[in-house]
Image 1: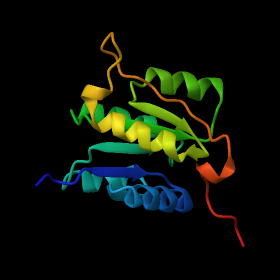
Image 2: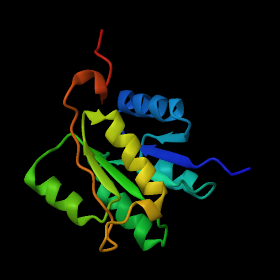
Image 3: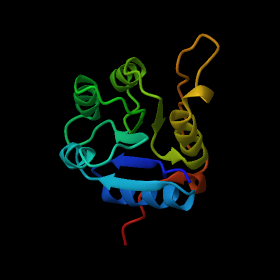
Length: 151
């Protein structure tokens, strides 16, 4: 029997966190969700996720969390998600070495594909041995993960 792979979500938006959590559980993943980098770091001493979905503009910066993990020698494939599609964010994400990056609203199939590739590193290499990057934006509202409408 193999141990379930844990996918961690770190996003300060509770509705996005819930939507991602439900999607991943519905697709057979074990999921842990965190509202802050601090919460994630506190929990990471108990379990190490196979993949981290990380909001770029988390209370502060998702890049700071990525840098802290790298400095601590914790190598976890990271999939950045962001609603900020500006030049600075795009450039920083592309230089981050992340397994993938997705723009909100996140396309469900693109996310599941990115996670699969991130946790199966042998399938994730391009011919030159570099990590493939995914950039996707939902083309249709029903496919994207968005927070529920306030009501």
